[in-house]
Amino acid sequence: MINCPKCASETLVETPVLGKIPLDVCPGCSGILFDKGELEALLKQSQGGGSADLDLINARAEGLVCPRCRHKMSHGGLVNPLLLVDKCPSCGASWLDARELELLKKLLGLTGGAAEAKAERPAAVPAGPQGPDVKTVLIKLVSAVVAILGLIGVSYELYLYLSPAEAVSRAPSAGLAIVSVLFFAGGVLALNWGKGKGW
Image 1 (cartoon, rainbow, N blue to C red):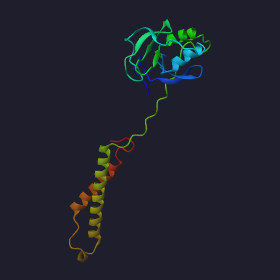
Image 2: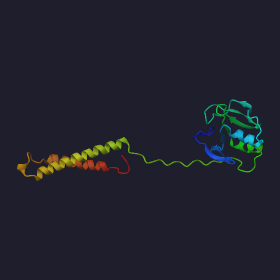
Image 3: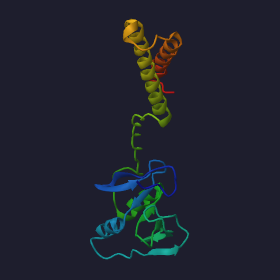
Image 4: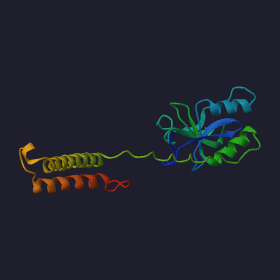
C-alpha cells in the first residue's frame, strides 16, 4: 500500500487512466503516480517510438517526497516547461497532479477519456471477531474452579448425610454444606455473567 504524497491519509488505488495502463491514483486529490518507465514509454509512443528528452526542464530539488522510496523528488518541466511534474532521481517514479493529466494528454495528442483520473476508495475490510481478553479468561477459569469445588463440597456433604452413621467417620456439617452451595452457585453465576457482552 502506497500513501499519496499530498494526502497523507489516502492510499493510492491502481486504476486504468490512459487507455489500458493501470496507474496508481489518489482517490482524494486524483493525483497519479507513474512508476519508472511508464511515463517515458507513453512519451516515446506518442512521438512515434523515437528517442525523447526525458530530463526535467529547470529541475529544482523542492518536489514532494517520493511515495515509492521516500526520497526527495525533483520538480520541473517534462518535455514542455508547462508540464510540471515531480520526478524521483532515486527510483524514477513520476507524480502528476490531477490538473496535469489533461495537459499531458494535450501534449501527447491523446483524445477522449476523462479529463482527470478518478479512483474509488477501497471498501473497508470489516474487523474480524475479537478473541476473549486475558481478564475474561482468568475470571471464567477461577469461576469454573470455584463452581467445581462447591459441587465437590455439596456432593461430599450429601454423601455424609445419606450414608448410615456407622459407615462414615464423621457427621455432616451444616456450615460446610452452606459454604459449598455458595461456592457452586457463585461459580455458576460468574461463568454466565455478562454472556455475549464480556466483562
